[in-house]
Image (cartoon, rainbow, N blue to C red; front, side, top):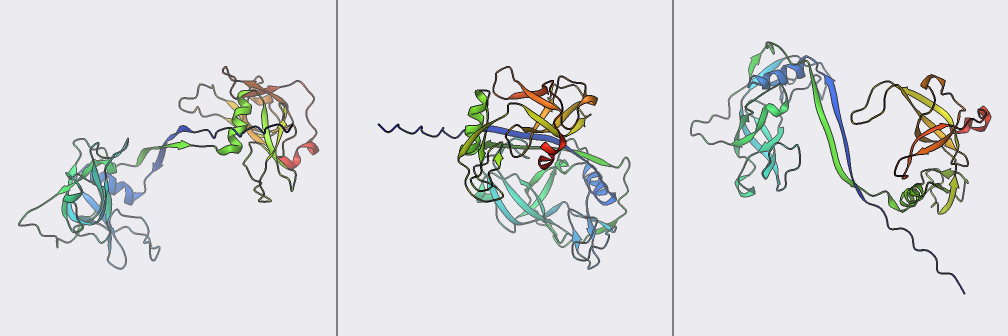
Length: 324
């Protein structure tokens, strides 16, 4: 009687959030632009060809020449193109449906991307005249422009030209912290689904390339070197060898691990390449290349929380040099 082959596990899916603060310093042009927004002033940079770029940049995109001539442009402008956003997401400028618009402010030659507060897509069109709605509280960020709003005035003069500006303000903004966040649904695929199911059983399973025989952990479903599918599952470890490592001295947000700690590449026995893991159970300054380690599983047993020394003699360099 021929046994019925086991059906492949259903691919996993889970929400995933990648979030971190992005900190950067500002040069003189960006500093003047953001400080100007705080003061309800929009600045652009004039290029060698006489074009006014808004937002301003520090170097001419055509000639790469340094740009330092700043000019003030209008707070009214014209929509050059747009797209309706029916379902605003977390962190977007408005909580109600709005239009993303490119607006060429009066006196500028390029367009600025921002939100337009409009009752519906029927109220938006290319050529629509709009003006800036300033935020009630401003700190020197693009969000100081709360949004654009439709603007109609019989005396409206869109031909107003840019006015020279020295870019000088009191208490200039010299740096910004921009929170970056990406929400999406992640599906690891069938190869990594099998890997994750095995981890839940406290086993580490890779896949062997039928051509070069390298065992990939975590498995990728195909060999990136040979370009062939990898279907032969191989259990590796659980012990392994530290190949390289680094000492982490900066505490990550929402990570309950005291610094300093060691993060390492660990070549599990039988694997063809190293994976990442934290090293514990040993002073950080005693971690070394060749250290033999074993997994310490998380409380729910779904993945190794960290790796600790096994007490074995260090591995010879020649046994792992190809995995560095």
